[in-house]
Length: 119
Image 1 (cartoon, rainbow, N blue to C red):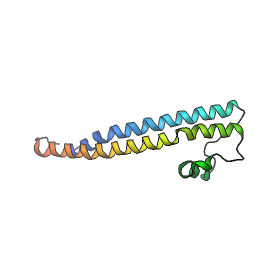
Image 2 (spheres, one colour; image 1 turned 30 degrees about the vertical axis):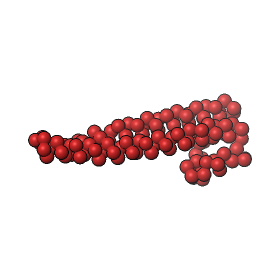
Image 3 (tube, rainbow, N blue to C red; image 1 turned 180 degrees about the horizontal axis):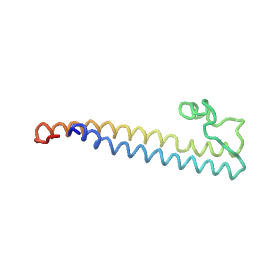
Image 4 (tube, helix red, strand yellow; image 1 turned 90 degrees about the horizontal axis):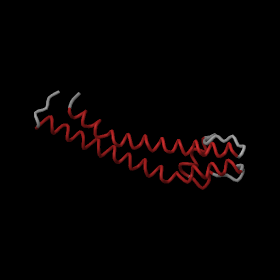
């Protein structure tokens, strides 16, 4: 593997790790919301339709619907409470990934070119 490629992957790895940790956190929140719905006697599927997924991402005010039962409503509100933080953290992780990958590739290429490193 070339130093350029190694630098790229090493530079991108903190962003990838940050994104995966954020996804894992959101999955834990989802599991807590499911458990909360189950405690109230509900069987809740967080994204039972395409419109639920679309509304969660683009129209959060429509995600909780009037026909939702109390348990489903509580679970959806719990998920929505983490929505903004989740998307902000994903954007930060993406920025870390891009900056790290580009920076790592530049440093790796420079080390190979000027530092005498060979593959």
